[in-house]
Amino acid sequence: MDEHSQGARAGGPSHRAVELGVAVFVAAFALIVIAGSLRAGVGWGAEGPRPGFFPFYVALVILGASIVNFGAVISRPPNHQLFADWGQLRQVMAMLVPTAIYVRWCRGLASMSRPYSSLPCLCDGLANTDGGGSPRSRWVCRS
Image (cartoon, rainbow, N blue to C red; front, side):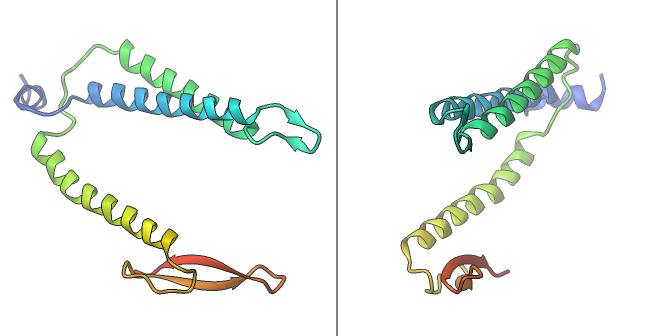
């Protein structure tokens, strides 16, 4: 047995499981977008396309690609190759989860504060003009 097949039994998801999971997740996302587009309308109105027109067709393409990916994974024989062990995934999550919480926190502060105030997440509200001289707010994060 090679090192990768030993690792798959030792712990961690296989490549096949991760590929199938991603295909199912992306297909579910596409189905949610399709359902929302159908609610908004996918036809052609008097002024042009209705609000759900473009998202509907983009979601159809994404759904089709997910089905193709799912079929490609199912058609291959399983090789039990390790994607990553649980320790590696724990290290990724140790960085990803706090970063996601921080970004969500910054977005919450940005929506609650006034446009020109300074935020503790290093984001500044900068005034821009849209060409007609009226100010509008644009959030820019400094690194």
